[in-house]
Amino acid sequence: MSPQPEGIRGATISGTGMYVPERVLTNADLEKMVDTTDSWIVERTGIRERRIARDDEPSSEMAVIAVRRALESAKLEPKDIDQIIVVTTTPDRFLPSCACTIQKKIGASNAAAYDVFAACTGFIYGLGLARSLIGSRVAETILVIGVEKLSSIVDYTDRNTCVLFGDGAGAAIVQPAQPGQGILAVSMRSDGELGEVLEIPAGGSARPMDEAAVRAKDNTIHMRGKELFKIAVRTMEESLREALNEAGVGMDELKLVIPHQANQRIIDAMRDRLGVPADKVITNIDRYGNTSSASIPISLDEVVREGRLKPGDHVAFVAFGGGVTWGASVMRWTMPAPLVPVEPATLVSARRS
Ligand code: ACO
Image 1: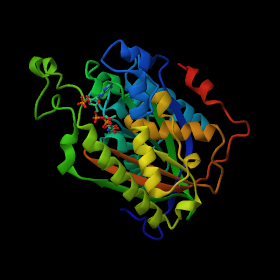
Image 2: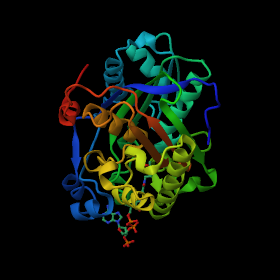
Image 3: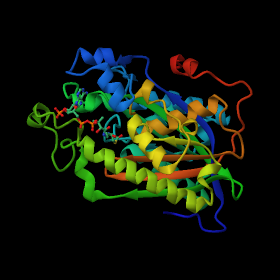
């Protein structure tokens, strides 16, 4: 837990944006690819469809569209950005970083740009980092981007994993806030002892990619789903309670909870343990599947544009992911609600160069 020391200035989200690719992969499509059924996938995960990026659409391309929308909503230009923090497991390549590639594409020439690896918890980690950098006056305007092209690391012959994941990007602009406004608490945790429950065995310095690794599909996600399920429910409950406690906000004061979209049953189990009513918990896993670090900023942008958050509302984010990592954040919302709510469907299909 990292409480903001007294006297440190606050930080808040002043703009959001999201993008998902046009191509839809439905459960019916997956029935033709692996031994599975629509009813199994819906019952066990809540997922009906997910988006898949084009071959010529790497993570940076998706991120650029989300970033342009976030900048527009914050009424900022790329040159206003001091730092670009990209949270991802699927950078375009390992060198240069995905953040530097995005910096080049948007022309954010005044920014320091770097990637952070915290798997599905990435957005919470990025928010925690941005809050500290703004609190300590190292930066004024920080872009936090969660982006994933998980289709590039999924084995589409493995029914245990291929039904779960999708591609997409979400972005948030973090800027200074008045004391007691904006990000009130961030809880960031990890336990490397549990790392093997979710891993990509090859492609790093421990085991560089070679033909044998590709033949064994060790360049794709390997997951012990049942173990992860239990870890997820326990850690998300713990960290949300921790962040609420730090923020001095009661569970019943939350307007919305935006959880990482990993599995509908994980979200439901967490919700039951916390005693939060279903209508306060955001889910879009039926439409996008699990987009890892992108899932919270995608969900956030949707609720913001639907006008579901207004200044003074309390909103919480909570996530877990590979590493194992987990965390939560509680905010007192500061962005004005849009005058005319924007339908998510128009966002999803809208494309911008
Ligand atoms: N279609 C049909 N049957 C399947 C499928 C499928 N797509 N996948 C697995 N099965 C079978 C299994 O082979 C198993 O068969 P068996 O009993 O003959 O061995 C049976 O279904 C039950 O499998 P379980 O693993 O027990 O199913 P479970 O109810 O646990 O659901 C799931 C599996 C969905 C993976 C669940 O464990 C889960 O969601 N775990 C967490 C996964 C997760 O959150 N991953 C991402 C975390 S981090 C991040 O977001 C990157």
